[in-house]
Length: 244
Ligand code: SAM
Image (cartoon, rainbow, N blue to C red; front, top):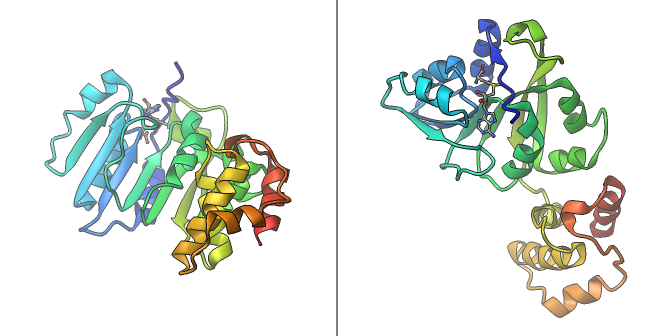
């Protein structure tokens, strides 16, 4: 099983990640993939509370040696365990969970995430290589690109370059953005049903009462018969145009 165990050995990289997180004394931090605890030890000094998730049982036992009352270790898979409430997420992420984690973050309420990610993945979320995930990221987050990180900064060395990024959750600026966000969150529903629900919910949140019948009428020419999770970039763009 792939656990992406590439540990950061360049202290400058770790310090830059911590600096970007701008941790305040009263903030709760979540770390995913604590590994050997190199980042964990820096974060726990700054935060009111640090939750650190680690899947590897051996590394988890090692992490228990960090004795700090503000540190709560969580064993398990970060894609499955329930997240505690947190203010900021800071992680040198296991690269193979980058995409599902971004998908998961759209449901979370937090201030900021500082992540170390593979360069190729950053190209996707930043729009240099456009996919559906570019659209999802752009809809939910403001993205700031920070410095490149060379393979030599890790042990063992990964095959690819990495990059530090910051994600800041966006608030919808108007009803249409709100509807599109609500739509994207309903991954398991058929697109038409998800859009109907999103229109009703979006209307309610904006102080309008939209009935199911009205929403259905608005969608009478909507032809895409697929689940939201299975839509491709073109279809997503079409739906956005339909709403806006
Ligand atoms: N934080 C350390 C650092 O900065 O050097 C380790 C980062 S390493 C890239 C990723 C870590 O995530 C590994 O310790 C690995 O065991 C752990 N991991 C991999 N998949 C995971 C998952 N699904 N949930 C939680 N931890 C995971």
